[in-house]
Amino acid sequence: MTFRGEDLLISGAWLLGVGSLMDTIGQTQQTFTHSDLGKDLIIKGNGIEAFGNSLQAIGRTKLLKSERELSQKYAIFGAWLEAAGNSTNSVGVSMDMNGAEEEGIKIDTLGSGVQALGAAFEAIGASLEEDSSYRTLAITGNSFISLGSSLGAIGNIFVINEKNVIGDQILLVGSWIQFIGALILINAITQEVEHMEREENLKNENGDSYPYSYNNYSFTNYLSAAHI
Image 1: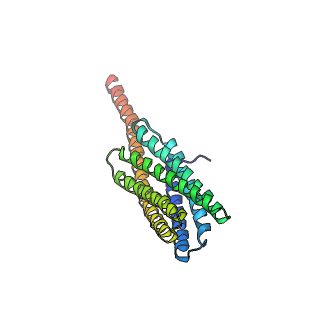
Image 2: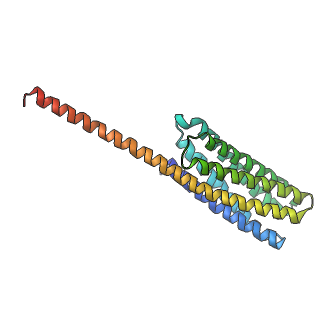
Image 3: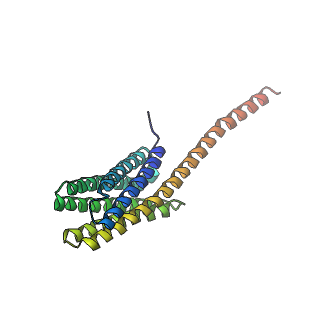
C-alpha cells in the first residue's frame, strides 16, 4: 500500500498532538503527586510523538519540490531531529523509572534539547515559505514546541541540581506549551495540505482543458479545409 505525502503529513501531525497530550497529562500527574506516577504516559507520549515526526519527515520527502526545496529540507531535517529527541526522551524516562535516575534525567535533558533544535529548524523552514495562510501558524506552532522543549531541558537541569519543585513546575509549563504548539501545528498542516490539493486540482483542470481546446481547434480547421 502506498501512502500519499499529504496523508503522512496529516497523520503525523495528529499523532504529534496525541503524543503531546499524553506527555502533558503524564507530566501534570508527576508534578502534582511528586512521584513516578505519570512517567509511563510520558514514555508512551514521546514514543507516539517520535512516530508522528517520522511520518511528517517521510511525507515531506515524498512531496519535495524544487520551488520549495530549501524550506522543505529544513523542515525534513527538523522533523527527524524531533523524532530523535522524542525517542531519547523515552529512553531517558525509562532509565529513570528503572533506578538509573541521574543518568536517565541527563539523557532526557539531551532529548529535550535535540527536540528543541529540531522544532527550531522546522520554524526556520516555515519562515522560508512564500506568504500563505499556513506559514504564520507553522512558524508559531514550531516555535512553541521549541520553547516548550527548551523549558523541559531547563526543568531537568533544576531537578539534577536537587531543586525538584521548581524543576517539575518548569517541566509542566514546558509540556503545556508543547501541547499548544502541537495543536497550532495540526491547524497549520491541515491548511498546508488543503492548499497543495487546491493547487493540484487547478493543475489537473488546466491540463484537462488543454486537450479539449486543442481538439476543438483541430475539428474547426478540418471543417474549414473541407469547405463545410
